[in-house]
Length: 166
Image 1 (spheres, one colour):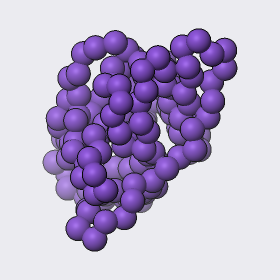
Image 2: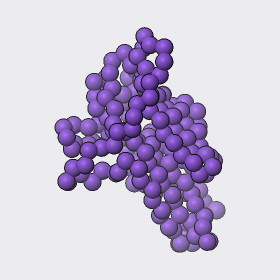
Image 3: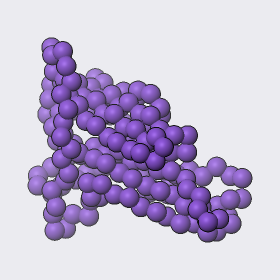
């Protein structure tokens, strides 16, 4: 049986490469059949969304650098290999939010997908502060020509070809 790369099924292959001060921590906890990714988009104007890249999230903490004073759309993409009625498919769920990064602040995302239950929480903390403050999830503004993913998206991609198993 071959191992299938779920990343290629989703269609995003650009790896996020910005290396600076690590101001974002993503804590991830998923079942063994679930892969998680963070897609990072820079927002410009009312409807401009530009993919900066994708980060594969392993269980535990992943430290990421974001530029300060930038408006981002960050979304966590959970992908799982599903077996149903003898068919193989890929289930895909995304949850995201807009944030504006500020100097002297740290950001945290908690992304969990355990026993078919998922949640994504966003937090921020001033460097001199003691507590994390939860950030309400803020979806992208709808634009007439914007083909961005919705706030929450669930997809099922069925594969019946035997080549997937071989």
